[in-house]
Figure: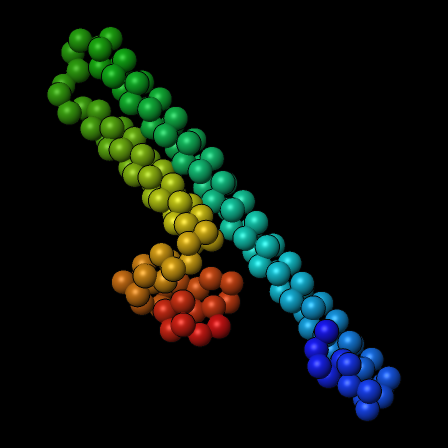
Length: 140
């Protein structure tokens, strides 16, 4: 209770107006919190989906690698380097999977450690925007 709440000279209407302003401010804070939580859940869901895709890419790349090895082993007259395109494709799939995992990890870190994200943003200017706040300029 503030000193203005106990002021006997204030009218009931003024006190009710103060209460209404405080309730409105509380509702606005709750709505902003809900928006941030929704955004955080969306980011985490997207990160999880990228991880699932990365896992699928890894499995497919390993399978292509095994298939290529098996074919080379079972075909005695194959030339060295004949299956390089398949191996290169498998290696690129692993690279894309790693990129997805790195991106999802950085999203999770940005949610839990905004200071670390701000430091990374300084290293790559203009790239970090979290919940509508431009971390590179320190403004919301």
